[in-house]
Image 1 (cartoon, rainbow, N blue to C red):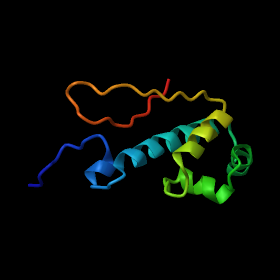
Image 2 (cartoon, rainbow, N blue to C red):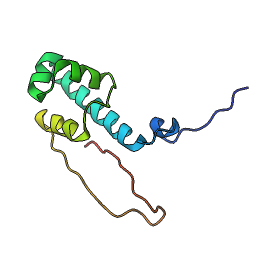
Image 3 (cartoon, rainbow, N blue to C red):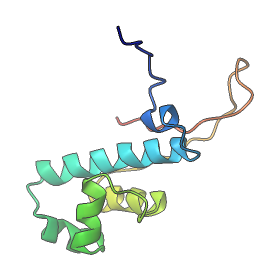
Length: 106
């Protein structure tokens, strides 16, 4: 019988990647960008022109190849797709000593 281990909620952390929080944030941003492109019925060519990135780079991002694009560029893509983006920095709770990154979509 196989042992089942409950995940942490971050597959990148579960895989032991050093930049797990960053990769999770990028994956969440890419998912939202993809959803908006689909809702707006944009082709990748149309979307890449609107976003100011090459179609191959957009295609890579939408397929989860996230290392070639910065979080800043992804946030810019969201604003170009008609979304407001807020960054909130707050103190950590008393139960934790270090902060963490998270993305909330309204």
